[in-house]
Image (cartoon, rainbow over all chains, first blue to last red; front, top):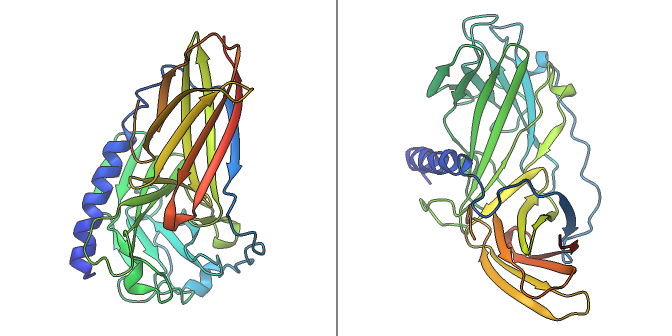
Length: 266
Length: 38
């Protein structure tokens, strides 16, 4: 995928995500109260992820303009052996607003390579809260060993003492899918800290988990499902869901069918 | 995603089972929960 194509696909992907995030589940009017979690039966047991050493701020090779720079570490490889350090900076100095992001896309432990400094493409200030959207990062072009095209979108939201980084990873349908739009996405909030070493690694991949929350109301049952890979929520339009409700004795009362990517299905 | 499902019959307790195949992202996953109907 070319950088321009990646950027275009990334912009479209992020626009879809932004729209989706505004939707509330159509089938539920109350927050589901009861929860169950189960991991995939075929999930690889595997060893615990390796401890990923974090570089010191000095090792990164960039002096932030702001004393309030924040760091995150994003685990991207399936084996969790590597983590990308990102640094949020305020180009205008302390309290000027986070508008610059450095990402160690070549995983060399420094933020000095070409293309690793990203300026916000969209910044908005709402008084106490500001947001900044950074251009998507074409991971496949920068990282050998990843098995499918991925676009990483990062955005900042915060103000005063509250800061958050939202990460979205777009997954191409298959290796060599070229410029196809991602058909699945992972979403989450990597932890931010004053130094890389204090930031827990956010893992976008890992053992699949399906969480279910239920809330009965009369004879109507609200069922909310969330799939996760590692620390990230998974939205996959191609992932079908079968829902069966039965008595404890095994009599099937109803069946339903949908897709994980269908926000508000039902 | 969420479903709003009408549960037929008068069972005071039901078992909800959801299965999804997330294919290349991790295979089939199933979750089951017993729910007391109000």
